[in-house]
Image (tube, rainbow, N blue to C red; front, side, top):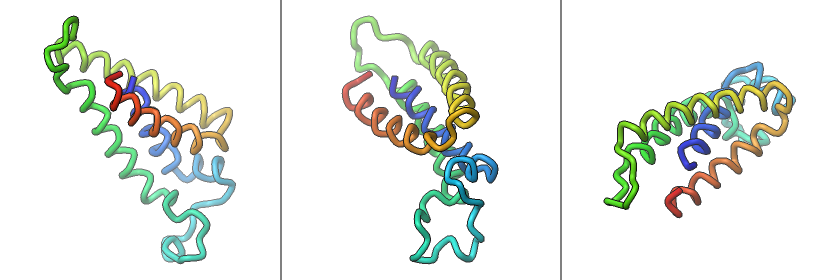
Length: 127
């Protein structure tokens, strides 16, 4: 569960890192690079230059729950099966993000934030 939610947040960050989806979600075009760090900018952390590396980092991070050992828990799957499950989560979350940025782009940042927080809780509880 945590891998799927992290993948969803990661794909959303990567999508919002694209100019077209960024403008659809936030209603403004990408700020000029020299204006991105001005203190008066409303949300400087949502600049596409920050979202793209954050998305790639979260995608790499999403592999960790899938490959981490299950501490010998009964019924735990081998890591190779978990990687296959991670690839499935990667694919399904990409389709979900595609649907969100296509039909509800203003909700994409909020959904990604909720998915990221839920992924952290899911990982903490071992889901």
